[in-house]
Amino acid sequence: MEKLEPYIFGGTIYKVTSLNFLPVAISKLLESDPEYIGVDLEWKPDFNSGDNNPIEIIQLSTGTIYFN
Image (tube, rainbow, N blue to C red; front, side, top):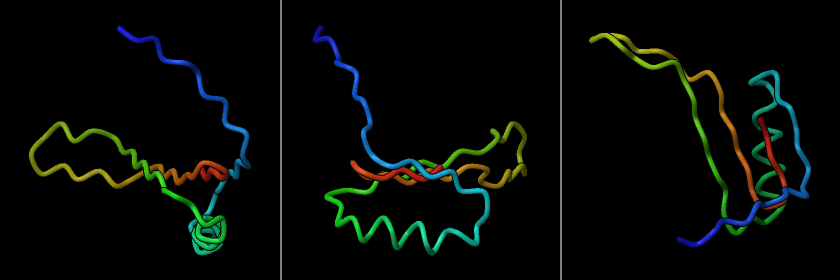
């Protein structure tokens, strides 16, 4: 099996604490003219039928900028 080498992120990291900042985050992502945009959504698991837990964390990233 091939060994994975660690990746060290050398870009800018922003901590976002309000949805009001989302338009700014999206604008900054698009201004960086990314080849790709990574999206990660996290929420509490739904254990019971009818559960519908909301998204708690949204992470957006390119090779040079990261929002958490």
